[in-house]
Figure 1: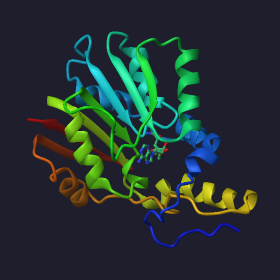
Figure 2: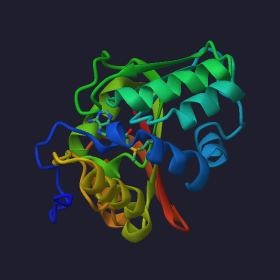
Figure 3: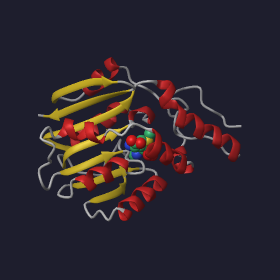
Length: 226
Ligand SMILES: C[S@@+](CC[C@H](N)C(=O)[O-])C[C@H]1O[C@@H](n2cnc3c(N)ncnc32)[C@H](O)[C@@H]1O
């Protein structure tokens, strides 16, 4: 049986559930989770139209749901999705190829130590990333660093730990049933932020504007770099 960690923190393992049970997470992402594409577009581009040539990065893109979605709608922007799970990236690239997108790339990278130079991107998006991340402040510092002045980031996070934990818990359970070896870097429970924590987290960087709001089971942040 899986040794499900009781602490909601990273245990130092390098193995990832998103790698071993990629198919399960991809199913949840494609079929069950809320699709925030329209919210994202409305928040980032109030006139619904990005400037041609804008460079977008998605952190922890998983199977590339949003990267492909934005690249498909707006052919004149370029989108880069980064993740550290090769299986998620393989799926993302297959989806990109199936949609024949030539303005969308995927790359292996660590969101806590991005390989990109300062001020590289116009827009950054991240969805459901903080629920599994051990060093959130570091991630926000990296978000700030890689955005150009005037650049914006849109963050979508679930609010209710019970619902947000179902994919993680199921993956831990399957790990227990199918693997002798255990120990994964993900927590067994989603680490959900309160609105106060969300505000405090983004306030760790000197954004020109921070807006945090809730909508049903999800919460959002829109930040602009000065
Ligand atoms: C809960 S999934 C979210 C995927 C996608 N953004 C979505 O909306 O469904 C979290 C993703 O973040 C990735 N991830 C976690 N920590 C990471 C890190 N330090 N660097 C890069 N990717 C990371 C995982 O591999 C996983 O694909």
